[in-house]
Amino acid sequence: MNEVLQARRLLKSVFGFDDFRPGQEEIVAAVFSGDPVLAVMPTGSGKSLCYQLPALLGEGLTLVVSPLIALMRDQVGQMQALGLAAATLNSQTSEDDAKKTWAQIRASELKLLFLSPERLAMYGLVEALSRSGVRRVAVDEAHCICEWGHDFRPEYRMIRKSVEKLGAVQVIAFTATADIAMREEIAERLFDRKPQIFVHSFDRPNISLSFAAKDQPRKQVTQFLAPRRGQSGIVYCASRAGTERLAESFAAQGFDTVAYHAGLDSARRNANQDRFLREDGVVAFATVAFGMGVNKPDVRFVAHADMPSSIEAYYQEIGRAGRDGLPADAFTLYGLEDMALRRRQIDEKALPDDRRRFEHQRFAALAALCEAASCRRQMLLAYFNEEAKPCGRCDVCLGLVALRDGTVEAQKALSAVYRTGQRFGAGYLCDLLTGAENETLRRNGHDALKTFGVGADQSKQQWTSIFRQLFAAGALGAASAEHGGFALTEKGEAILLGRESFVLRADPPREKTAKKQPRAAGREEKVDATEGKIFEALRKLRRELAKDQGLAAYMVFADRTLLEMAERRPATMEDLRAIHGVGERKIALYGEEFLEAIAQSAS
Figure 1 (tube, rainbow, N blue to C red):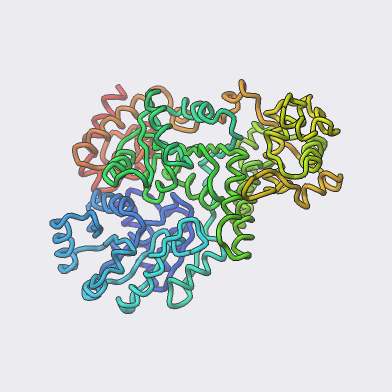
Figure 2: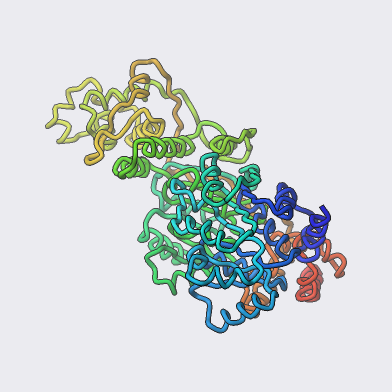
């Protein structure tokens, strides 16, 4: 327990934090005990401190296994900015830097060494490290070891064998997403004995959630980004081409943008990621290749221009926003084509039956979240077996989603599917229901069906929404993996025959879409005019200092720290010490300049 008290003192003097965040203290205590540890904590809850503090206080070297070079560089940069002994060995490490790192290791000066799982498995490395007093191995993003997970990395399977060569060292592992099955797999594959397992709340209450069905998606993304100009954010796209098109389009509108996907050459990809991490107000348009390396605390929004691949992936991706605890927004677009593609991908994969059922269940959970009729946060947390009250901040709780009994419309749509032979898609069926002039309908004789024109009181857009919701709810399935089209499921038959009712969401008319966006979260809701002036002055100073030192801006001070400075206006070094995120090293490096900037901008 004495070690935990020392850790708390270090927390304040080095990192500038008054106390542990919820869940940190018990995990730090478990790490000090020497037992193997598996901790499941939400993104932004301070997982890294749970291995950094024991490493800094104890003897020996802590190896940190991390999946991405960018993430390793970022964490090493943060440690070094605090004056702490940390380094990384990776494919981009220069020969001179590698020599310095090995000299530090041999002199027992290094506390934290960041490695990829591939580097750890390289011939001779573990043998060399085993003579260097390695005390523990911390595995970050431990869910990457799970084959059924959304970020599976085969190289993670090699970690245990590498660790065994190091001898009797402690293994600790961290992840933000792992259900019961994944936790069991991590424990089995990574540890030689049962670890202490800590599972903390998955809730990220500072992130507001909203979803919208696709209807002119470029315009919808524009409407979401417009009030967030000047903020850092990520827009996820399904295709590489989509990231570049959107990045170019929004750059032409005056946004500071970068594109990121696996098809870019490594130099451009790294340069774009570094600019996003280091500068304020950059919007990254990216595929899911961008993410695990993002440790930027002041990302104010994450948008999905296309439907995510799963709830786990969605949770990980929106978790890149609001890591500083300040308000952030997550906005997701989805469409019938997205849903059909996801189901088709599952059906076309060579999977065992139990795995295919599992993938369909994951898809069904994601589709239900998209079409939710109750609190989004409640539904998201329920997926992770966590109960919660209505959040009051998502689009459903804010009353931006209208719900009504749609059983009759659902029966008309399902009847159209049934009477046309269960083989046509939404466009054809919408024409049938609205009684549209359609040569193919006449040629098939479907203009003579009872359902022809029975839905003329609604637009094709409304019927498309109804088919999408039926598909998401599992009332319709794909008629053919090759040709598409709809077929009734058991649930669909039950609704058609009146055994089940159906609730519909009313998609907003196009001209009202902009008014249906939840209000942008961010500092403008939190500061008055004077505070805003001070905050911008401090951001400018931070930007200049970071550029001079080759650091990411937030490594000088995070937005949360600057906001507190602007609100409380410290006038002395002692006042500055009371600000969140201000430790002794940063007072020595930056204290006078920031006090001067506060005094000048407040006058």
